Image 1 (cartoon, rainbow, N blue to C red):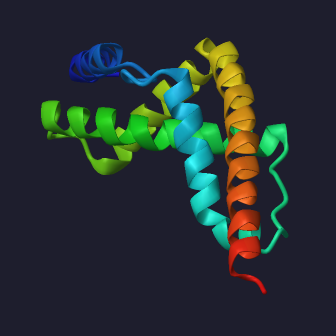
Image 2: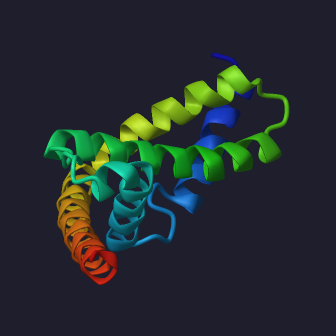
Length: 141
């Protein structure tokens, strides 16, 4: 690896450390975003009472996907601004390396976030179902 490559890696690590994996978002905020996304994507199934809640593992994958999207957007943009000579492929490789590191480092927080998202999702679906039943009673003869 060239000296230039080492410099790039240390600069990328510095950018990543500054911006962090979770950004400024709390675990509760991430859980809420995930539950809102699931409800938006499955609104029809929820209304027709055919929605099947994701299991813990499926929800954890969605949490990781959401974190990855946010991370790549923030850190990827910062890396390309700071190191414009890197190709998109090189930036993606660095982002993958960093994301894997953070996933291992923050495994417990991700696990806790998944529990919070599951609780948030159940609560939101319960409230939405109550509202839908009230509307059906109101507008059904």
